[in-house]
Length: 169
Image (cartoon, rainbow, N blue to C red):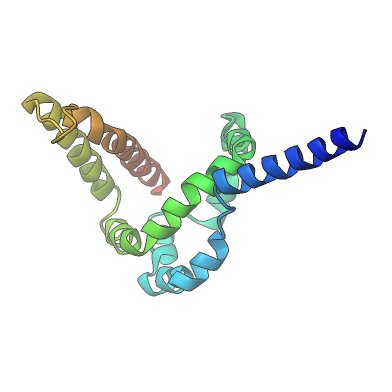
């Protein structure tokens, strides 16, 4: 009985050690947001007032929530919280100091800036495929590798452009 108890304790400590060493630590996004001063930068750049100028008010944002639930997007986010917290949030938070000024400038221009970004990203990926460019040392198609970033960027940029365009009164 003593050997079984010792084995269980050792196995338990081994699995705990493996889990803590192999799994990523919980990201402290709110702390990092404060360290980077993202809220202050958002206020300085006037992003919220630019969104309101483009037609996104709190009333309209609140009205979108039932539509998002109908599409199942809120349930999708709720079911994938760990992926979002440990995967997407760190990328968004760390990239925000570079992206906030770009987004603020695009919001000044309006939906056309987002359509232009979508066309540019999609066009670049199409060019990489058409030219047959390859990633050095790997021999992989540059269009396929860059497409992992450029195709979602194209879709998101076009979606934001459509959304902002539909918000205009």
